[in-house]
Image 1: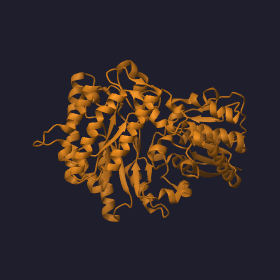
Image 2: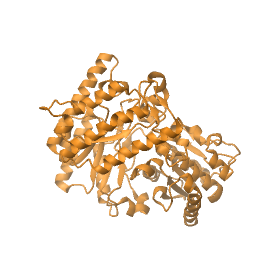
Image 3: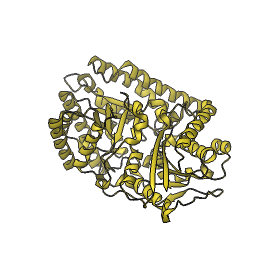
Image 4: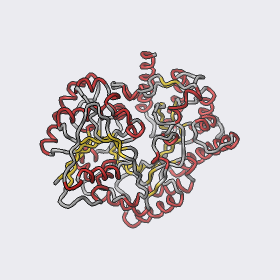
Length: 531
């Protein structure tokens, strides 16, 4: 008896506009976990992975919809002819995947294998499970496929390994596959969430599922995302950890350093895998200081004994958790940290929950210390020639003219012998406009607290190639509008790029400046249309 599982990663409205070239190891973790467990005697599991971002498909947009559906059906039928899957698992990893997730499930249910078990999971499914029931599905999809019930059989909330494995056990119960009946107007069944309490109980990562995309994955611009930990101890108000929807984000769990190193060596020794970039996409890299110290010791020992890894490693860091000594270890290990600075306004840092504390005086002092630390890290990284970068988000809820001026002053004030920070040191800022992600404190409360106004609250339901811009149509507060925020940053962007170009900082380029300026112009143009 066998079970053939097809894992599907759908079209991404975010990556469509940003060329976000990354492979996530979500399904690899699930697959590895399944194969580390027992299945009933005589039962066999086979798996395939298809990534619709890298198949021969046009962009999933209204102008392409007819051609897209024709080509998608052809691809799925071709897969099914050689691999007649019994179960499909689709990752709705972000809300930018939502519409295509529904489209793919509807096509499989209607045209490929009506009896197929279809499972959906991911953060969107966890926070908004109702979006996968019939009465919440996009009408342009339900009409086209004449759906009388949701195409989804099961929905997994939070982490996927244990619930998916238990679903497979039920499939094989009593030695025979369990039939699944789809009733008219039936809702998809939500499986009970279960967390992996000990990440060391997971088997080592194996990326064989990606073999189909070997050529794509090994291109220079692509990176592979892996994890060494799960959860975050902080509750920044723009992050899902600030709300109550995803409990697994609140529980910090870290792998042993031995297992982390084992995975790095396994990836570097996988013959067909020739990646140039590896991103460790933990919310915070090694959030426990003792683990971070141990990791640095082990990776440096490994590099002395076995040489450098064949890929560049990048990690997510927090300003307040990183020391100058850590930067030195990063430089020695040839690991590049990316910091979530978000803003350089003391006032806004407090408003977005970046600083811990209850008393306002404590938070204020914490914000001042945070920015002093950020400056120290910038200066020390320059001495080490370590190209660290800092995410800077424009238009966060709570923004007003005071916070904008405060943030600019941090970079422009001439406090270095008559020069500013950006005139004296390489300061690599990754600019981005704020996205109105739901499932956060800000999405639920910013309007009441700051007068924030989202012009398209359910932007993930917008079937448009401009969906990503809809997610950014947000007036940050009742003190300032979105167009005013963008206008106030136009000169600052020029100042940053010009100053950094004079320092010959290769992080910046005319292309990057033009790209982001055109991005903001597109958001403004869309704002003019819908306002």
